[in-house]
Amino acid sequence: MNLPDFPRSFMTFTVPGRANTARIQIDARCVLTRPGSGEAETFVLITPCKSEEMYVREGLFKAPNYDFCGIWSEKEYLILRTYPAHDPANEGEWEAGPNSPRFEEVKIDIRSQTPVEPLRTDAQVVRATLGNLPLLARTRLRYGDTEAVIDYPVKTMNICEGTERFQVDTGPVPVPDMDSRAGRAVERFAMAFVCYNTFDAAEFVLREKTAVPQDGEAACKVMHYSRIVRMSARHELFCVGAL
Image 1 (cartoon, rainbow, N blue to C red):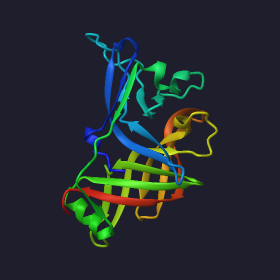
Image 2: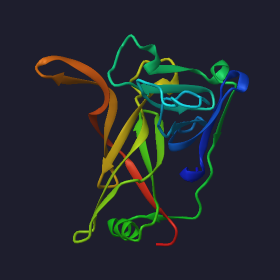
Image 3: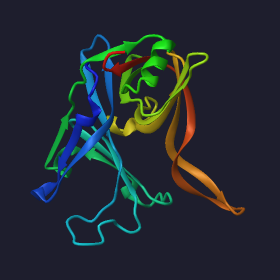
């Protein structure tokens, strides 16, 4: 697998009747493989946007507004809408199904990023960061006989020059939940941010229903990055351009 050139990689969907085509940049990619089986499936997380009315003269943003995001494969989609408050009766918050007939056309176009240079030591990561080189990461996770390979740009990198330490804090990325009983593979993903400062472990904070107490009253629920999970992982970091 080549690393994606994220600024030039897009998911495009066209609604039935071709009333609208949306081209949305890809924020991250996850490839699920089962070693020895030859099976692999690619899922992409799109960059979020805001809900809108299409092609009207004014009142372009819907009110009340919500975040629109989602995960797509060549076969399936998962749309995630984030409203000011979580309402379990609002089926639109979580919409999943086959791409057809929900969309007339879905295209996933992932361009390869070349050349890239691997960063194998903390010192190399610090140098690339101080040199303002674009950074890419690949995180490998194991779930029994399944491997998840997550590719993403490192948007936030922390470094300490005195000790040549680094710490990634970036996202969102799609993280699979192999314990999920959801029927569709695309529904077994959560949006998450990832944090790590070694090459062999990661902490994820996952987006899920979260209680928020208000003035001593019963807690309301919102969709928020709140559940923290630590996992063994294998990270690879790369810079775009010569180090």
